Length: 330
Image (tube, rainbow, N blue to C red; front, side, top):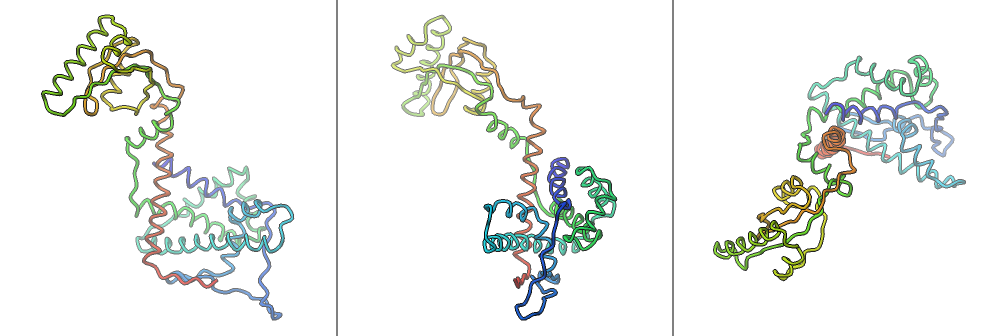
């Protein structure tokens, strides 16, 4: 679980690296010859989000970089401004969520230590092959951060966003979920058994009808074991028995286990199936082209835990918003 969260957290912290050619947007002109120094973008409970904070956060956000890169060459100033407004609104939503999570952390006395921030910043520097001094110089020179302390504060906030759900949200991944994901993931590549089958369904579920049909299935299985051809037995029963391929998860577990444990050419059954019984002739086993479950399960668990954590985190944010006073002023 910790390794899965570490992957999610590390990828997020890495996005805090300072762009090499960052530039600050100018302060807005009021249109009357005066420069607006700052204003309130939103009020979240007792916390105020300033327009300058929003502007800096939006400028360095990966969404802004991706959004601007997605614009066509020679995009008009109007198109650029529209894209910028769309992304800034999304960034404001994130800042509101962060303010709510900060308040919740205070309520439950959840703190991020200086050592944790030091380790996270060191990881960022290492990923970008920078020394700590080099990273600090880039941050200080960048107009996107007010200071090195601001940068460390943002790293602290990112850690908090992953720490809080660990305390307050409920999420887990079971062994059954891991197995089911593996089955879906390897459905077209998993081990399979080629079979032909005969189906025996009674007209009713009364014991007498079921007993007669079961005896009929036993007789067919006996004939096949004694060397009679499947086509001949099927024709006598007025059935068709085409070849089919069965993979893991395609049939009931008891039938699946019996088929995968059987040898090529072996007759399996009668086995209870649905409303009646079934008799199989195993043709051949096809080995899996997928990674063995025992080797793949840890990786699958990490993926599912990361997805479950993100879902729990989003649900926590929704809950916090539902009970908070939020006043958006931009």
